[in-house]
Image (cartoon, rainbow, N blue to C red; front, side, top):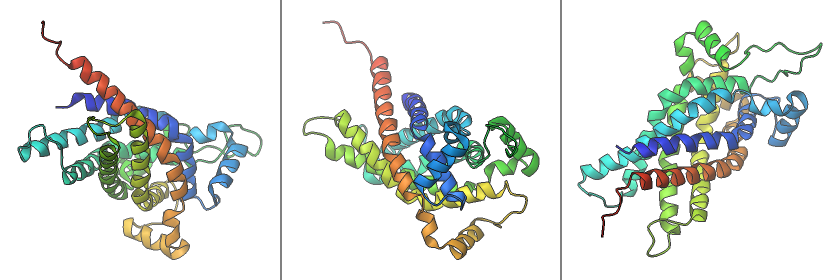
Length: 299
């Protein structure tokens, strides 16, 4: 059991959230609200109405839960690699590309059940555009914070409401994490100098950032559907009857291009976030494994 990967994955996920959350808020708003027509327009409108706080709405719960979900992702990935290697009796030999792909896919599916409740709370708080500054014309906030949002969803929609949008979330994360880890492993292999076991830290940063871009390129269409289904539950009158109806209604009213409207900001956010994630993950894993290594034998 690779316990170190759970610990380092947890810390890596928390660092990634801290780096990428403001752009994640902009992404979610562009995906779900027609009043935002582009990245810059959304940034300006959010800042002018809500201030800096507007970019960090709902960050408390993701910071608390991302450590758990990221721990599940990296821990599941590493232990699946070990199991697949043992199944083909490869011992300590390198894993094959199909094994890396399947382990990434399993990691994406595994985190869904843990991630969904926190993700829907995050999305609804991010899309709450009313300002906290107050004033005569201020709109009353529906959700006062992460806990209030969580309890309101359970009260109004039942426990199943916390898993609204779970199907597109699973489809998003299974394929994106499969390609994410496969891209990272392939680039690390290419960037490792002859005679070395691993790439330099600059190689890790490049491979991590690039793998994030590849993963989010595949993930973006399902991410749009997920966010719309999650926000649909917050409306008094629901617009979508389900997963397939959300896809067809979105294409009918806005065209297929809407599924990639947030692709630019996903790329912008993916590189620095995943660069930080993998540098943290590799660094902490190395420290933990060095600490667990047996002392050298006496001469």
